[in-house]
Image (cartoon, rainbow over all chains, first blue to last red; front, side, top):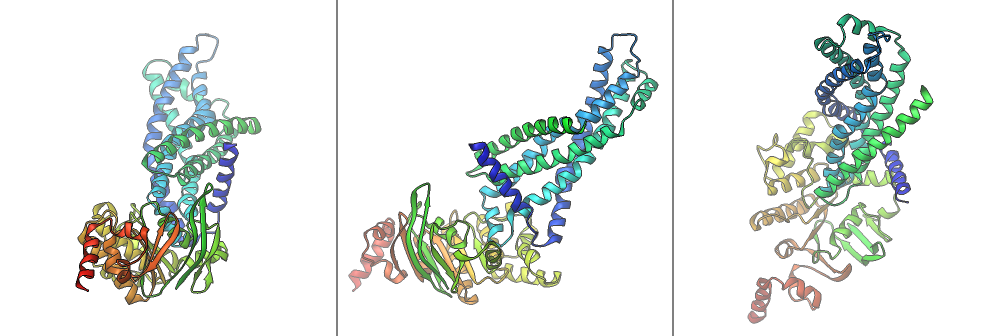
Length: 245
Length: 254
């Protein structure tokens, strides 16, 4: 029954979040702040992870291609499609759920237990709207951009590591990443990014907003937020893949 | 003026407030006192609408708050200011931004006018040169004063303070008490303070409600409290021997 109770509370909170803002200009300003805090500050980690994963995936595809009849260009193609279809959307979303999600839960949770949320309510501010809506908009906007960045640097990672260790030449790799390219895969993954971005921000905010108690409870809520967001990302990945591919 | 009538509130079948009725007067510091866990904070949060009462009515100058819809309550709340136990300042904003926040959200004043109002409020609570500091960079007493400044920046008609002295040294506590009292009288607002600090009671208790186990046990003012014939109140007041001595001295003088 708890899951139904929590789901009901989540949707009730979302109704509050999407209520009409008191002052649009303040919400817009807050959204830009969140884009910087949650999005721009994630660029570094996205680049590092993507570079390494692109390199590692290139090596693994190369080492597993023992059949001499398979064209070597498949290494670039394998790396590209893995990045476009799954790594840069789903795996990155799981990583971002840990980074951005726990940040959102602990920030809102701390505000809740120190009565900052109550003080917003007393002022007549819709605390859920003011605190959560800018975060949702920021993450939904920034996540597709992080995805594109991740695909780009993942491919660059393969281009650096593959030729460097002699697994594939730069020309073969570049031919591979251009071979049989399907733009729909990118479109499909961008849709996944919008859904995952919404899930990361809204589910994490829900766990932060409903926390009660003290610092320990905020920590527990952060963990629960990350676990639940990860599960939901995987479930929605399955649903969207079945529906859209 | 705030009137509460027959307030009941329970959590999971445990009665926390039982039939509380009281008038809180304008231009006076109205105190709700009682031991920890007596229901003071629940009562205050019920009055401001952070908690919903199970039954009863709350009137703000004859406007029934309990019957208002969400939109009416939000409008009503712009007439309220509240100082929370821990200050509840926004950590990510500077002192000045904290005080300016309600103005940014609800007023149509120009930037210069907002700044003037912020400066006035900071001056009102005797704080200078802290505008650009963050809450974590100032003392607990200063944080309380910033919270008071933020609470009065929209010129509220009703001010609520939840244990404003908690965690402060006696000297700073007296300063905060005097500040709240002075603001109440000067601005002619209705102020309700939750406290279990007997020093505050004796300093600024114009109109006092004592609750114990969620029940109204006594009401009166600071002049009457030492001589009140109420067992539970006496236990609360004379837990500090200093007040027993004051009462005994007065009786001996008579």
